[in-house]
Structures are given as C-alpha cells and as structure tokens.
Amino acid sequence: MFSTMLTRGLRSSWKCRVAPHVPRRSLATVLQSTDAAFRIPIIDFNEFRNATTISEKRKTADQVVNGFKDVGFIYLSGHGIPEPVVNQAFQKSAEFFRLPSSAKDKLAWEDPRANRGYVQIGRERVTQSSDADEIAALRATAPDVKETMEIGRDWDATWKNRWPQEKDVPGFKQTMLDFSQTCHEVHTGVMRSIALGLDLDEMFFEDKINEQFHNLRLLSYPPVKTSLLQREGQSRAGAHSVTAWEDYGTLTLLFQDSVGGLEVQNPSTKLFQPAQPIPGTIVINAGDLLARWSNDVLRSTLHRVVLPPAQKVADTDTEGMTPARQSIAFFCNPNGGAEISCLPNCYGPEREKKYAPVTTEEYIVGRLSATYH
Figure 1: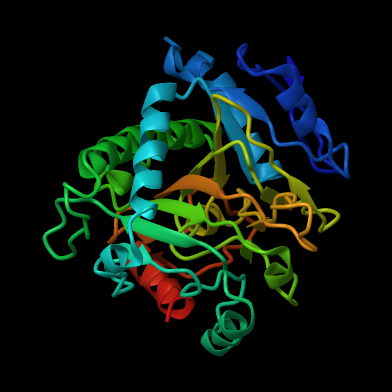
Figure 2: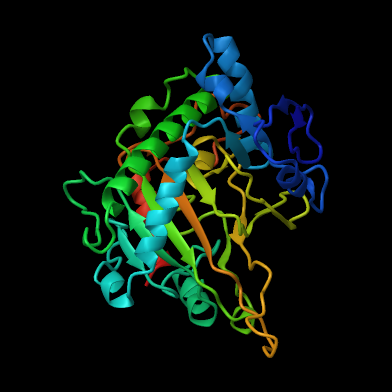
C-alpha cells in the first residue's frame, strides 16, 4: 500500500494500491521531492473497473477525487490501455515528426475553432497569462521549443483533421483514431469515478462528455543547445495550468517517454517538483473547466516541462545538447455546447459560486485565440 500525496493541513488521508509491475527504482524516484507531504497518488483503476457494487467503486472514486482536490494530479495504473497500444502510438508519432518540414508545413494549424494540424517550433507560447499582448511578447523572447500535431474527432462536419499522406506515414491515421477512442473510454471511466466521489450520480457527466469534443496532441521536443534554452523565461514548455487546448477542459491524459521532464507546482510552497514517468501509468491532471465546474473544489495545478540533463556531443564541446523527448497528451473536454456552471454539491452558504456559466466552446476558443499567432 502506498500513502497518497497530501498537501499540508489536510484533515484526512487515504491509501491506494501501486501497480505490481512498477519498478521499485522508478517509484522511489517519484517519492523524492522538496516537500515530503506533497506526493502524486498512484491509483489502481482496476479496482473501479472490476467493481460490482457502488460501494466498491466509491473506494476508488474517493481516491481519485482526493487526488484532484489535494494535488490536481494522479498516476493511474490499471487503466485498461495495453502497453503495445501506447508504444504503437509513440512509434507513429515519431515517424510523423521525422517527415521533412515541407511535408509537415502543408498540414499547418490554422484556426482556433478547429485546433487541428501541425504547429512548428516557436509558434506557440504556453503561459498562465490570458493577455494576448503579454503572450506575444513572451513568444518573441522565449518561444516554447517543441513541435506538435493536433488531432480532433474525425467525423466533425465543420472542422477536418489534417492528415499526412498514407504513403508518408503508413498506419498513422488509423493508429491515432483508435488511440483517441481508447483514451475517450478512459476519460469516461474517470469522470464516472469523479461523479461518485463528488456525491453525484455515476452517470452525471455522461450526456455532457459523449460528443468526444477532445484533442489528441503529439509532442516532439528536439535536441537543443543548452545556451539557447537559458534565456530569461525559457523552458521546454512554459509553466501553465492552461496551455494551448491542453488543460482547458476536464482532464488531460499524459503519456511520457522515459526522458520525462514534467514538473508540478506544490500549491503550498509554490516550488516545482518532478512528476517522473512510471511505466504502465498515465499521468492525469484536472483541467481548468473541471476546476471551474467544481467551483475549485478540484484543483487545476500549475505545471511545466523542463530541460532534461544536457549531454555533450563530443569531448571538445563546451556546451551540451538536451536529448530528444516525446510525449502524447489527450485533452478531454465536455461537449462543445455544454454549459459549465457550478456543480450542485460544490457550493453552499460557506462556499459561494465563483464563476459565471460558460460553454465549453466559448471558453476554449477564447483561450486558443490568444495562445497562437
């Protein structure tokens, strides 16, 4: 059994099960942080998926909700996505990013309402700011050093995905469509657990997330000279709780390679602490709309991607190169027209409603418009 990460001052604690295949060394690394009281819980979702009664489900549901209340992040094992499926998605992602720029640029991202296509290095600037002028200034001085490919639901009648030629990356389209569907099913399961953990009906969110208004983002961080990444304000991806599309919605499912680099801000100390990759798990964080929906009962936590240790290319080099890094993020969102207004169990005489109602599409398109140029 493994105690959850709890922020200081909490009135209760709980325990969750560690997936048995997680190497001890990886787990020990995760436990090392600047604040021993701040730990991301590892939750075995098999116990929810295989439960036969609501009371059995509620045990896992409470763990999930407490993780999002206390930290804003959880590691989910027993999620039901086989390792070969994840590996295939990473392989096809790598094949896409190896295409020449001339091929990728034909698929360029064009419209925040669509949020589909290829985003070249430097086009996006991730920040907590929502001010368009401030974002533009940051982008000019310290752009995020990554390239991405954005994929949405493929049956959308208005906005179409921008796929590479099948001959260029065989199997890419079908792999990503299948992976998106699998991630949606995980999202649905976790949202059911959140509903139970908030004392709502298990199916409360069902008709509010069934349109699959999600976004699959493939990310590639190329090797970069460390001197170029040591300017003021520069990092692999700026500190954020909201970044272009990701984290605007309900949940983000993050699949990391072994390089890692994700850091989460401790809400108490404001220090960033590593969220090391753990084999067989998905890192999941609550997004801004889920925090807004819950009146900030569930936490949307600031996080960033930082440089991995530099490596010298040759003995004569005076500076190092960061290793390449890959990740895949699935950004889960409510239906586009869903009204995000305070959940019934998240306000009362001692907790006033903080936010006016807003639709998913209104909120996300507004944020995206400021993030890209």
